[in-house]
Length: 264
Ligand SMILES: Nc1ncnc2c1ncn2[C@@H]1O[C@H](COP(=O)(O)OP(=O)(O)O)[C@@H](O)[C@H]1O
Ligand SMILES: [Mg+2]
Image 1 (cartoon, rainbow, N blue to C red):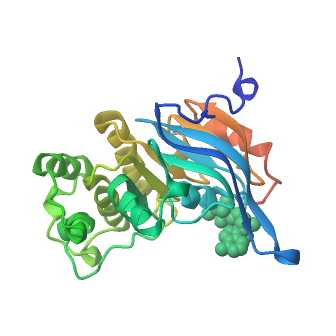
Image 2 (image 1 turned 45 degrees about the vertical axis):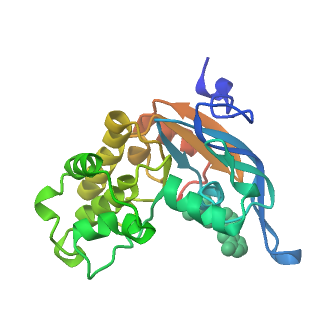
């Protein structure tokens, strides 16, 4: 069976399915009203498999960031349900949602969002410090070794390269061992070498530590680090690809985009 024939069935989760770290069931997101009305997500059903690295691709404005924000509980859906593990986000009150985001979800953004006055190590443990939780020392050690920043732990962000700063942000997301990490264009601000460092790290954290990661990217070679790619167009998942290569992803994207139109 080809990827196209397989369509979205690999990624689609029936409610109650157990091997997904996160699921969305027929979610829609509408911004604005009247002439300004935008349907950013149009009935998306998707499951994010546990312990795998999923990439999300699609043209600019196709709803990639909206999908991440809705699945991570940073933005409310207009319709449908979102689950993190067995917990339905869309039913939680604000306080419960805040706690779930803190305990179960990690974020990596295009801007690294590090605190400039804190060292790398202090930045990594900051969310747990705020939550009054002590990091598991063995786990923290492993995360630090996987990021490869042990000699840099006392450095402040301004003393680190872009790639190193983003690896600190990755370690910060991993430190609390979240159920799932959402990364929106995590290599968007990095040169290709630093980008490759961060992508290898994300892939290793999935392969070696069983982390679940969903990453938005517009770069086929970044998507090639993932286990599967979801393709989004006009607020809908229109295709999936397993074990992607940069060449196959690029080929597939040609079908979705007008020549010369960027995918950011
Ligand atoms: N806060 C918002 N208010 C109004 N429209 C928005 C908002 N956020 C996103 N949109 C619109 O929703 C659509 C999807 O946006 P987005 O999810 O950011 O796309 P992508 O990340 O794929 O580029 C776009 O048409 C965008 O203009
Ligand atoms: Mg976006």
